[in-house]
Length: 553
Ligand code: GLN
Image 1 (cartoon, rainbow, N blue to C red):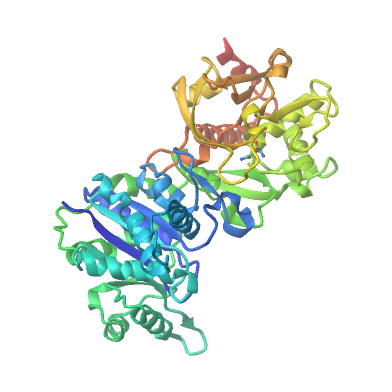
Image 2: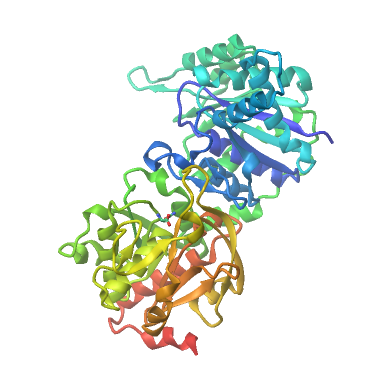
């Protein structure tokens, strides 16, 4: 079967959740047995979002093959449980880079290089790259931005051309819009949707399906009105009502027959009902927790929930496994000091110290980690979070007062975290970190090996600095153990504190691999440790530390 293409565009306003709708549709199609993937085309000029501040664009999601991508790719992986790659996220920057490189090589000699056809041809080539691998029957392409934006135009034009070239049964456009509710008139309003569809029509694209975001149910009369004014069939007006959780959306779309409508328009047989048993089981547990814990998420971008998207989702997955509601309390690392740390931490059952770059907020992170270490509070450090735990231990246990990462202080006497050797000669900023999947060998009889139930793992990375092996012995002797090592480079990947209920720092990003079908083992165990912390605090303050020491033989 030739690959068929589904495009998802957005109208009226941004932030309508094209990523979640795309992921939900993909989930339904996957559950019907189709081989499907999702890709995102972003109209900005950055080559990738790796150089963007999290305040600008939320988290930067990293794939196995080392692409720094949009956070929507995280949703795709969490919903579909299949990895994405470099090819799944394309930006205008990438498109232009390719065309300009070809122009310099002489590929267009004699010709004027123009948006149409050269840029649109390159967009169409990229759209079909994954389709041409033969691995997928259906490809969903999310077009970033909002219809009407100047920078989206070449993408809409490429969609128009593809629809014309491939035909309506091979190419389908879903337009996501908003039906606002006017409180004073007590009415849902369809005009912005009509205008947004008109905008698409002006560019030559007739949407096949409208997915309408709304706070209130759309009745049949309203659906018919939208259908009539926007030239679609009434069954192609899909209600997308605000959901309690993003994980409800596939089932809401199933109820609205989005998948069936898509398949019938693409002239595909829908076959059996989708197999969503596992998904429903997950939702059942998510909505009926039997316990709860409070976890402090300590970072410097906490004002923006999207900055730590994958971490927050990994907590939802791990909480569900433990039938536990994880209340994530955002704590700004710049607000923590030795005076207020007890007050800030004492109500928590664990802390996660987040990834990050640069010195802002570092001392707050170190202070929080000291508190967790000294008070047997479960601690999970990710990337910079692990590096801060190493700095804290060096300063307060090994007694090296000015120990630091050279990222924060170039002239420290104890550079316990230092720039990786092969990073020292790197001048370019974009795409030059240690990125993507690397192997890690885990030491037997450790909390980490117990969590993974494996000794060889692969996890994703995004960093320039590393644990400085020159200091390894001192740490090991004092009981902060390098229990995970990259077999090729000897880089420390996991640090685990022996005399502590649960104190683990990882140089990689486990949150990026947590999915609904495959919650991450370290997050699961961290939540278990937080549950134990809660029980310990409630029952006997004399923590059973011996129990935790037993696993080290
Ligand atoms: N800034 C640190 C480094 O580059 C940590 C990066 C991160 O937390 N992702 O090594």
